Amino acid sequence: MAFKKLFQGRNAGALAVAGRYYRPELDVVRFLAFLLVYLDHTLPRTGTYPRVAHSLKFFAPVIDASSEACGFGLSLFFALSAFLICELLLRERETSGTVRVKQFYIRRILRIWPLYYLGLALGVAVALLPGGQPTDVARIGWFVIFMGAWQITIHGLVNNPMNPLWSISVEEQFYLFVPWVVKYFSRISLYGLCALIIFVANASLYYLGRVQAFSYSIWFNSFVQFECFAAGILLCLVLRGRLPRIVMWKRLILISASWFCWFYANYGLLSHFDNAAENPGSWPLMGAYALAATGSVLILVAFLGVNPKLLPGWAIYLGRISFGLYVYHSFAIYITNRLLIDQLTRTEIQNDLLRDCLKIGLSLVLPISLTILMAALSYRYFETPFLKMKKRHAVIESEPVGAHIDLS
Image 1 (cartoon, rainbow, N blue to C red):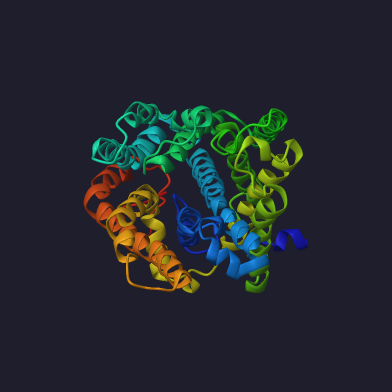
Image 2 (image 1 turned 90 degrees about the horizontal axis):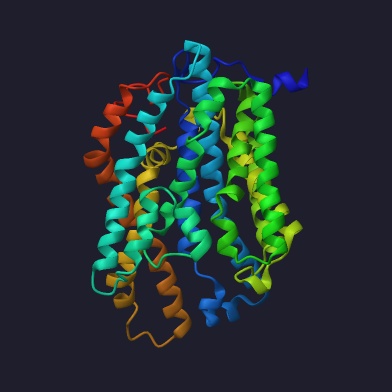
């Protein structure tokens, strides 16, 4: 009885009615996921600033582990994507009796491909400009066919600001099978599929730990990351369209527990894992990625069903443009570092610690300001036409009521 009271009915909550599924809190989760990824890419590690590390003393490893934990924002992206896609497809199957796979792929293409290939084009431009590496163009070619994740898994990162687009390769690989399995599999079979995915992910982690693989061969591995997709699908299956009925203080506990999972995964299990010699081994790797998936699910449960009136409008908007934020943020970091931050920190400041703190502050503030500007302009003038076309192929509407486009 207590378990049943934990969830609201399927049609409860704002904007969840027949033929439509829009949860504004998921937009906030999208923005949170992006913000964590951004912080992972911009927060300095204390080893880069010895004077700052000396000032922090024994707090330095905690700060570094917290910075690394922000990287699991990408795990949250994957879990959220799997949860929402599975929810929409299951609702489509209930409403129409089937899943229109062709329409699904048209929607995904219109949503992802235009901005994705624009990001790749910008990456090629950076590689060919003075200071770039023209040899990176050939490696970027693997991203064109959505094999970027595997390219990095084998050869390491490309020295180019389009690097974050590797995650789109993993998403596209997920899309290859998800509409088909939702169309033909029963709910029990979907549970079995998730169990199989989790088994494959952990078998891969066990092997990569045994062979002392490099960190990039693990993090960018699609088989490893699919564990978070399985976690998102499992959450969708367990909720069955219902929303958690949780008081706010319990939601805050869930968010804290999520952060503890991510922090401990880095501080306790993956500490200083930067090369093969420091590979923590199979079991710590399996535990760390299980915590990454668990923390992602806890965040989703904590936000699902929150009263929309409690959500800040600016966070909802930034969640709607989060794909652009993700695509452009690395370019914004590249631009501000080359053109602004290095120049602004070449001052007559005599105090080295103060100069380091100024550079850290500028490295956090300037890129995100430029990122938001780029993403807002892109959303309005570049993405909108494609999103309007996408709307025509929607079976279950997933846009805000009264809005002209969606960003599911």
